[in-house]
Image (cartoon, rainbow, N blue to C red; front, side, top):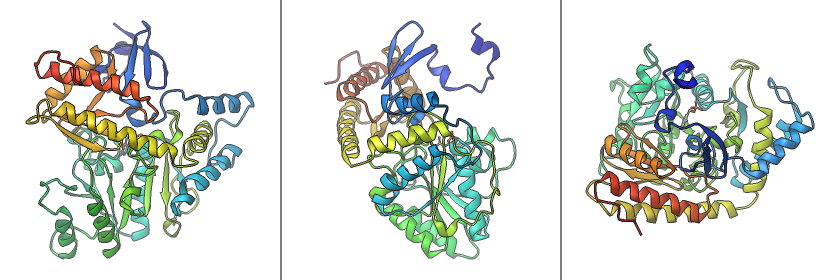
Length: 422
Ligand SMILES: *Cc1c(COP(=O)(O)O)cnc(C)c1O
């Protein structure tokens, strides 16, 4: 019996699908202890947008540690934090005309979501937050209340409160305006919906199956929030940090949320790190009111700053990501054409995949892919979507190689032989 099976809780999850022991990683490749290479289209569930061990943040961190830089901090002022804040202001907020204060929460996405929900309730004095079907916001109690997935909700074993559900963009088909329903329910004093403090939304639902909110829908959601005095929270934990081809996933829609959560790829190096961005006028916390020992992570400040200065000082990287995303979209479309009645391309930017209609087919595809050296996972309410989350830095050749493996895996899973996709 392996040490993992002997000692690790049954709650372990990803490892079940990729039953090898990984030893090292670079860029978009993982290597197991037998030296076998795997292309990584999982990228730490979206926490490695710049790939594994990118040399720029790695060197910055090595230098910082060698110079005895502060490792631990409560929310003390450190040089590393100052440098991160400067870089974030100069290269992320200022060029986009955005004005936020940063709340350093505990280092996971769920922590940032908890803080966002709390402050929205505190600002408005209301308790209900509207979250959307198939949304995923983490599994701590407050965040899990906003998460749709029954598997995760049931794991809480207590009533989840303070969240009302509304249908996401396109949930009832392209012809049904889901926001008209929400608007009417807020206006109707006997709809049963308490006046919400806020709505929390992903522009692309990462865990929920790569459902995308359209630009008009997001704009109307923002208008609805303003009309009813609700705060707009965009959970950009997975879709942010460049994943959709801009730093923030909501930029393309031209909206300006009141609160934004970031985590996953924020450190740029896979280190735990999360922030909640709050419009200054809503920053009504009393000092220490939302507390925690690990608020900020100095090593992550160092790597995040290095990545921001390297990738985000101009728009070159963004344009490269969008080019790659177009190519990815073409290849996925071509794969789906093999079985148009069953397969549909979904998602946006470098957050795209194949909706297989059912979880069994998607799982078979991922299993075949792994046998051929490609790590890729499913998402969606029934695990029906094969989700490609390749590092944004991946070279075209490696992206194509991974997509060719995916194409072969789809063929095999559909029992259509091994014809190689073009
Ligand atoms: C992953 C994720 C979270 C939760 O982050 P954790 O670090 O797993 O707590 C929240 N929201 C979204 C959109 C996510 O993808």
